[in-house]
Image (cartoon, rainbow, N blue to C red; front, side, top):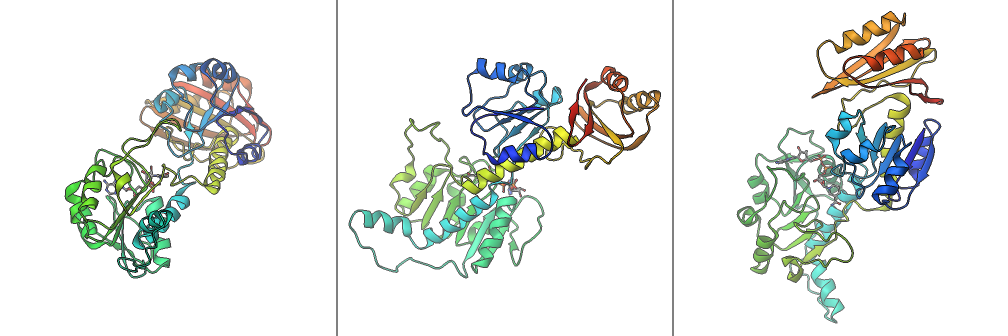
Length: 409
Ligand code: NAI
């Protein structure tokens, strides 16, 4: 099995991939130019990228042996997921690997803002000694409002409770409540109730600009706001204007409507002139621990697909978790068009080959189906060829042994 890892994927990824089976890993430090990448992809079976490499239809067609793509990051926008699915290529990512990093920074930001630290740091750099306790508050006993109680929001809830904060949250879906957290019936109720409000929702049609002037005005005059989620959730012009007028005591913003694309581009924001702001360059999840965790998570998912046929946690594929292959069995995987009659055609081919199915799992999503069948004994090449020829088959593989790798016909 050949894996190509681009963009300085964390070194921990190597052991996670090779821990499941024999893999020859090639690393290219940057994202190479198109011609170099296409040449390298000719015999690549597992591809690991971060956010810069664009995997589109044309690139996929230059990778005839490609089995799976691992995005060693959170987002998967850089991959044409539908094109990958049409080619029976599952795409994996590491969505929870930096959850803790964001939750820690958020809580630290709330503490810093409620103590007025950004303003005091700015003053001391200019030789000013702002020693007054006016406006400086502990977080203990204060109301923290979490918008979006998903991975990050719920982790933050636990950490904030430990500091003695009263946690309130608003989510569009019913959620498991951690500790003594209180569910708010509406965003407005949360905004009116809390001393610190923090956003942890994705950018969607429903959340875009969810905090405009009206919503910011609902917040307490001395409340603080944190946005470490997405840049288009908050109207930063309205935020800067209201802060300038003395509404809101501070804001910590890590994500912006317009972010520089690289080091060369200058950052500008109406918030730069505000006193009690903590502005950071979209680094909420950027820690050494998160990078290592991303390296391990994405690599394990790639390897488990390669050697066990597991599509668990794939973002564009039906999810099948067949577990380890038992001794004496051989595993047949088949990605196929989701259409009536396919499973019976597959089973007819298996039974015509005299093979006995010991277990079988099938899942479908949209136009795609994925089935994993464990067969007693060995699978001969003729059966694999017959399955590959079936009307509707996109790809089929035989997994011989988790430590021996895969035979593809
Ligand atoms: P998640 O998917 O686990 O949680 C999101 C939550 O928001 C879910 O519980 C969902 O039900 C809720 N939600 C969605 N739409 C909503 C709406 N209209 N109203 C109320 N609740 C709604 O996501 P996770 O992992 O907690 O991440 C949250 C955000 O943080 C994402 O936007 C992500 O991109 C961002 N993020 C930012 C990072 C940074 O570097 N600053 C790093 C990692 C994540």
